[in-house]
Image (cartoon, rainbow over all chains, first blue to last red; front, top):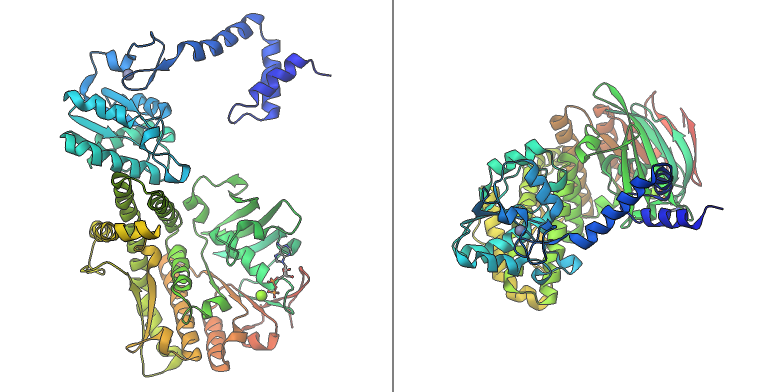
Amino acid sequence: MTPDAINRLVAQLAKLPGIGEKTAQRLAFHVLRSSPEYARSLAAALVDVVDKVRLCSRCFSLHDGAAEALCGFCTDPRRDERLVCVVEGIADELAVERTREFRGRYHVLHGVLSPLEGIGPEQLRIKELLQRLGDGVVTEVVVATNPDVEGEATALYLTRLLKPLGVKVSRLAQGLPMGGDLEFADQATLARAFATRRDL
Amino acid sequence: MKLLSVRYERFRNLGALTLTPSAKTTIAVGPNGQGKTNLLEGLYFLSTLKPLRASRLAELIQFGQADAVVQGRFLLQGAERDIAVRVEGKTRTALVDGKAASSLSSYFGGVSVVAFTPDDLAVVKGGPDGRRAFLDRAVFNRFPGYLTESRDYARALKGRNRLLKDGASAAQVGAWDEALARFGAKLFVRRRALLDEVAPKAQAAFERITRLQAPARFGYGASGLSGLDFQGADEAALAQALHDALVARTPKDRERGFTSVGPHTDDLELFLGDAAARAYASQGQARALVLAWKVAEIENLAQANGFLPLLLLDDVSSELDPERNAFLMQYLVDLGAQALLSTTDAALVQRAAGPDTVWWQVEAGQVRASDGA
Ligand SMILES: Nc1ncnc2c1ncn2[C@@H]1O[C@H](COP(=O)(O)OP(=O)(O)O)[C@@H](O)[C@H]1O
Ligand SMILES: [Mg+2]
Ligand SMILES: [Zn+2]
């Protein structure tokens, strides 16, 4: 019989996306064989993620500062505060960031409009985006939602709300694979798409 | 392109079969209900990833089994490729040389097929849905990218319909109007391009088949796009026209809970002279129209790809009158394409057979191959 502690670890690991029972077992035994110090710092890192990481109160990116504080993107004085890039999720934000092409700030929607999944504007950080634009500092919004059906429709929805506020709205140019995910696009493609963003 | 061999596993009533077709004509013979159509359907599915008749993928899996596989060895542009498709539950996986195909274009690189079934013969007199599906199969065969485009359109359409039913805000419906118009315009462009290529060839083929006075005409019926030069408009103008139509119909669409204009409501229009074939064509003329279309589709694919498509003819000879059937058999002989024909009566297709014909006797999902009838 395998000790319960191992079974528990395997069961928890197997809940992770992309990890099956077999891989979970391999990982668990790897942890067991490694130094106890490794297991302790892994555990601490896991706990820190939930205890310390929170959403930025302005752009909804992740950060580990104080509860009401802003994230690094929002506070970095070298970033252009007139430019905001709207992304679906954190993974997309990181993908855009990796290109080093974009030096403005972000706004993370945490999802995309999807009538088929019952996701409307209220479930996304859209109201907060509009509030953010109220002070007139932001002059251009780059909508970097994925080029699939929901991403396109969300971009068009945002355009309808943003254009009347007098901000310039642009969309990443195609060149991104249609139906593909921003998250998986290679850097060169993404960089090119940024350089050639179009008006909406 | 040549199909070198095909393997079926748990596909409908075909348990486990490996078959070697002729490089030219292969004829599957057997009584009804034995699995002849299933043989053709498997090949169609392998070549297009779309089922030939099933509405649900799960129907392709043998009763009581968990999955089904069709695998073919093809000679494509000088190289042997192993192409397979597996259905499990509601999902299908495409494999090229044993690896999951990363993109549809890598999967479809070079495989091309035209199917001809008794259902096709009924489209002229049937409803617009059947003609749309008939047209879309041809578009898809010619432009594999159409598979993704029509899926995107269908998803956008479903989304808009849901918003209409839920009484969503004008801003949300408006956003979907715009998205739907853009995705829809892509379908317009593809369908128009296909008709531009195929219609003249089909009209010429109809003359060869019937030698009749009234010429055939094949056109695209875009409904509800008022004041638009459909033929001359570019993609942006088509999107604009569809968008205008969607906006104009929104109040009515909200009442009914569905979208009443767009590529999903259009029709393939068939005329004999000035008369709509749907209302005025005789049974024989209707079938000649479909036959002419299929001939045109084959010629068009051959011209576009530089090689002949694989032909799958399911029991069509029994549905054609003797004269049209004779035309078709002679056409196949002259064309020399790789073809798989099914029939309950070998005599009907005898004229398409040559020295290199392979005969498959089909009985209860089993196949016995022979090289003479
Ligand atoms: N999923 C399935 N599993 C097993 N048998 C099936 C399945 N789907 C259809 N069949 C059987 O296949 C037979 C029909 O095969 P088909 O190819 O249409 O015949 P035909 O030779 O007349 O063209 C029927 O006996 C039917 O019960
Ligand atoms: Mg049949
Ligand atoms: Zn922030």
